[in-house]
Amino acid sequence: MKALPVTLSAIPILLLALSACAGSPPTASLADAKSLVQLVRNEAGARIAAGTTAELAVVDDISEPCDPDDSDGRERRWTSTSVVSLDTAAGDSLESVYQDLIDSFSANGWSEVSYEGGGAVSLRKPESDASLQFDATAGDSGEASISVTISSACVATAGAESDEVTTLEKAGS
Image 1 (cartoon, rainbow, N blue to C red):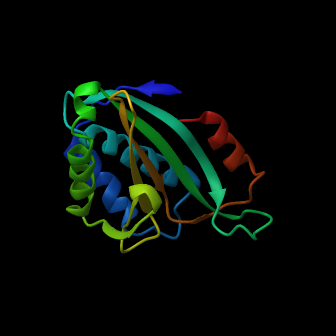
Image 2: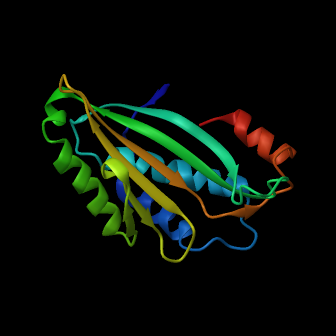
């Protein structure tokens, strides 16, 4: 896992990222989608209260087909998952930190669409196909973590094996 510092300026980056996620222009590229997804992913980590974050680790950062039956994978979305490990003191208030994170995105126009098994929450930007999923985990010895997965709206590509897709996937997070 690659640890990233969580020191973003919340408001300007969030406004940029969320306004762009509000509706994908017809000329949006997978590179644009990747950039926006990574900004929102990092923003989610930055929103966790100061002093509670031990580490933000990127777990997954990939493109994936929008339709699993599309053998060429021409319509793709960028998906990124990170896990924010909380220090032991934060683990005691995991529920509150988790709910504050969800509420902060809801206040910015993300709508709750479901509670998944185990307490995971999915949010969607009403004007697009962009989605966020949060899940909290508390360990037996006081450790706690929150996973954040964001997926972009679908964009047109030349396919899963195209230079665009392979180059972006090699570039990582």
